[in-house]
Length: 193
Image (cartoon, rainbow, N blue to C red; front, side, top):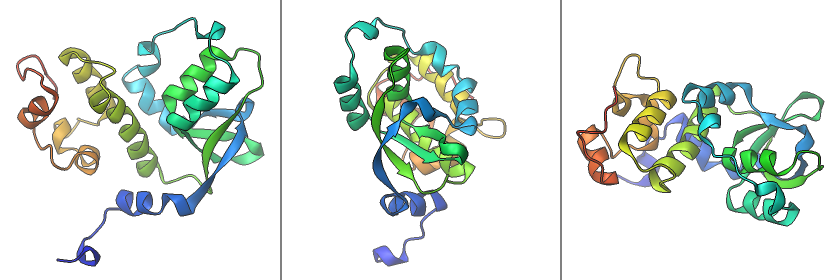
């Protein structure tokens, strides 16, 4: 079977062409806020409350925020009235908010030509959150990981590993045993629906 024979999901199709759907630009962050759909996802697991406050006001300045925005980019789209809406880059955005109370800041961002459909936006944000949580280990204990994942993934009808979102992001991890083995967690202490 050649690569032309592989059927891609709508998410895979969108991501495969994402570079054609926008460009890098410097944006005025006074016109930046979180996309309302994405804000609901973040609130489900109370992510903003889990981000640790710090005294970064004194040590972070424009050049360090620029570097953060390059290393962990802001993914936005331009809405009505010149308002930018954040889809991904939540950790950079949070650091920017902590660091700049009164300064007008311009940061690099990837600006999409138009907002993706809500299911695509959700998968983009879930990819960022799960990458940070599961691949960069910003949390390393089973109960916290389980709490975040339960908040981020809709488990009303299925367990996390059976959700369409999980399958799109982690198709090779099909159950709790594989997940715990991958992260080196105890399957006894990792409890999710």
